[in-house]
Image (cartoon, rainbow, N blue to C red):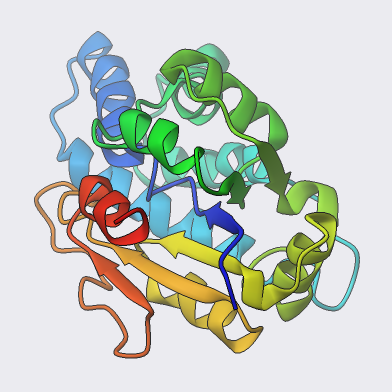
Amino acid sequence: MTIKALTFDTGGTILDWHSGFKAAFQKIGNKYDLDYDWGALSNEYRRRTLKQMLNHGEHTPATKNFDDVHAHVLEDLVAEMHFDKFTANDKKSIAWDALHALDCWPDFPDALTKLKQKFLCVSFTLLSYRAIIDTARKNHLSWDAVISCEGIGKYKVLPDVYLTCARYLQLTPEECCMVASHNFDLDAAKNCGFKTAFIRRPNEWGHVEPPQKIPSPHHDFVANDFNDLVNQLTP
């Protein structure tokens, strides 16, 4: 069946969260003359926030969005690290300001323009609506639509989330292609009938290898970057 829509994971596939959080942590750390591996702390922050968000809403209605989780997890991290000098504004600058001002990967804006000529291009994301709005404005990204798990009331990787996304687009799952750098997202979409496209993001976790750098063998497309994906989808 012909692909009519590309649904993009956004938090890591499109946005460079590692650099954004690392810079925000380092700025506050420098303020208090703290010496720490801020890249490693950013990765731990990412691991913990994802763990709390994935499958949220499975048994009871979702009670928090990803912004809430970033704030709560940061409180725990700051307490564990004994960063007692961090003020409320310091923490907001990391958990909210940095998140809502993330840069996108440089290969994406031009690719989005080209892909939109053939497909509906949709941000399909764990991130809050406001985070997608703010990062789209900053990076001059013009999505055809934004479908946040926040609005669905359940979060990836629950099957209902992917099926609802297709339904909102008035398409069958087979007419949608999930685009992401993470097998857990793509595999869940594939199980719901989506086509899948794996984008390599070797620097997503900074100098640490991505935890899922090798694509699952059943993906329909594997691309080294978004320029490669454009060439595969728009020959």
